[in-house]
Image 1 (cartoon, one colour):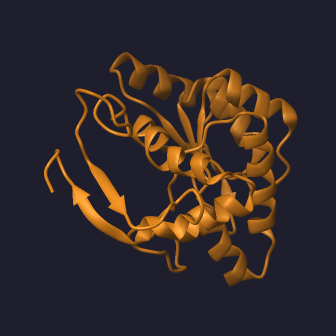
Image 2: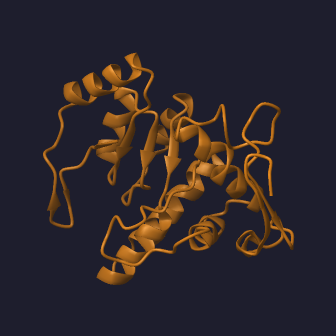
Image 3: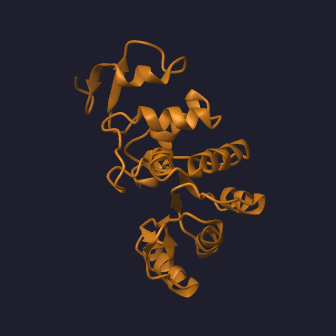
Length: 205
């Protein structure tokens, strides 16, 4: 993971040049490693996409041009929006980044973009939910994602961005049989995912 960031609420990073970003991406890809990019602004998102990153961490909190949405989808770049982070930051600083982030996610998903679940747990001074990321899922649902889209983002897509798609994320022959059994139907209420009745790990209960 690399940070393509210069100044975020007074927290500064050494800003990488495009050539540096491109070299990092190319070097990682030569070694069959994925590259994730920390992003918060559209101007830096364009650099990440152009350089060939595999996924973007954090939904941007300014205007997201349609052209960048199209470019993300055309280049098969996954997005981990971390809405719980922006919800906490917005509440703490009394700003509207949470609203901007959810609106941007809505447009990205409606266009066919691929999303994976992540919360930036302990990445900021605000509190984060431990265990099943129900709050993150609820915020994603408020952004217009369906329960099935959210479940896929936390299974198949999450496994993909972790480069574990050949082992995890879907129920298929040859993959690790890590499955939870829940009482209610999560397609009706996502909170059902936190009410686990049985855990099957490596095919064993």
